[in-house]
Length: 366
Image 1 (cartoon, rainbow, N blue to C red):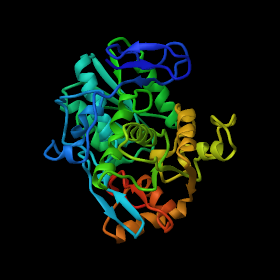
Image 2: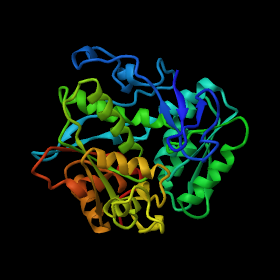
Image 3: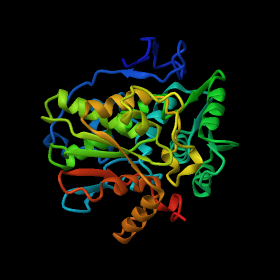
Image 4: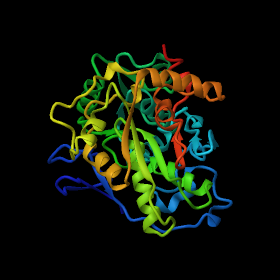
């Protein structure tokens, strides 16, 4: 059975407990999990058309909270750059991949209440899947969150708590609520089940490309949930002999809020002491405006181990990329265009970018 394990000090906990972080260091959990089996591209034919088709490598099976998430299209944009349209998920963002895992786990644990914190998309996803699982839910968001996202959270029946201040203040408020007995903290940052949901993004790429992966996978990085999921998947595929090499992971941040990029290019293993550069309100890419991601060490290590790098994009590049994608028929939110802004002109190697949130969630950049 899977178990929580702290990557910093080795503390362990049972996944049937509502212990949302390591009780020793208060850091996020990893998941000690051994996949039940393997598969080939051909063996997937005829399976359920959702991310649950990869059940052998998931820590949960036989879900009841599913909304058919996953299996989003892969569309070529240039001769070398393709886009995976994860904004076509049930709640219009890639966060459904992890949220369904959290809601399914919570359903099985039967907590009195579920809480989550988010800059928007994770909150809408958790609200939707908690509604599916008939679980009472409260979502904490920072002031300034897109009104369309807060409207969506309320529409799913979740209680909305708008927190004065920035993303870190919002997380602190949610974590205080998470310490109340009987509460399940559906944290896309602290709970590793979320990462095992996001890893299905890469399994789908592998399947759609006929059992291979591109030279590089670009992902926008704030808290790093998609990047860490991608790192899990590429490691699993390589260990099982299903790919002969692991693609480079290209992490993209907004130049205005780029603490991980600064640490990476300084050769640091963790965030720099001052946590700079950037404040959350300084970028249009609200979904990755995270000044101090709790999994920073793991993110930096994953990018280095893959032979990848960090790239940053300016606000003008974000505006231009959003309009350029719209002119190609793809209306994507401002966070979701960051990777296209960073690698859209690459011609020397194949790369896939995620279009991970619908434009309807934020509107056009001003």
